[in-house]
Amino acid sequence: MQFIDNLEFLIRLKNTNKNRMLTDLKLSKNSIVDWKKRGNIPSGDVLSKIADYFGVSVEFLLNGKETEQKWRSMFYNKFLKLCEKNEIKPSVAANEIGFNKSTVSAWKRNGNNPNGDILFKVADYFNVSIEYLLTDKESTEKEKPLILNERFQKIIEKYPGFIDILISLSPGGVNKVLDYARLVMLDENNQ
Image (cartoon, helix red, strand yellow):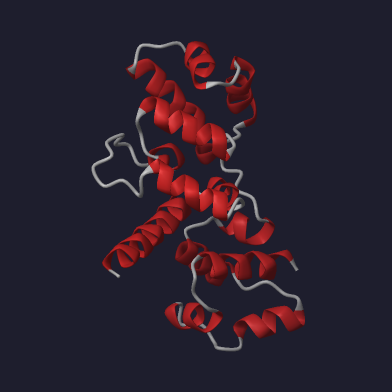
């Protein structure tokens, strides 16, 4: 059942457990077992609470994909803003960063986000954070960066699927994951 798989994935991603989530959302301790056993999906209200808890859409909970147009075109629009701000054509920026203009066209046409490698190159080229590129955060300043891009790159190398997960989340979900990553980094630095 895709809903249960998506829910368990988000629980692991948030580094929590089923009981903690159920307690936080004030749901029955047997809810997940019941959903699994009966093969049913919770009510709309419960789905909405779970989606808000993880910072994803209900659609992501049900089918693992975010298709809302606002989020689909966010990266492309930010790329265009950065090009405009730096008075550079998108095709020139693409060439200087190391990919071709057809990639930019695909972002526009399909609403896709770039792969992790290109994402890092774009962030470095424009001197913005990964967080800015993947969320609805409007400031390009790195006043409180998640982590230096090279540190983030090490995480991606260790967990190659992480960037794909991040790219698939809604901006709210990305923010929650990045907030958690900040806490982990602070904890590691304080040890």
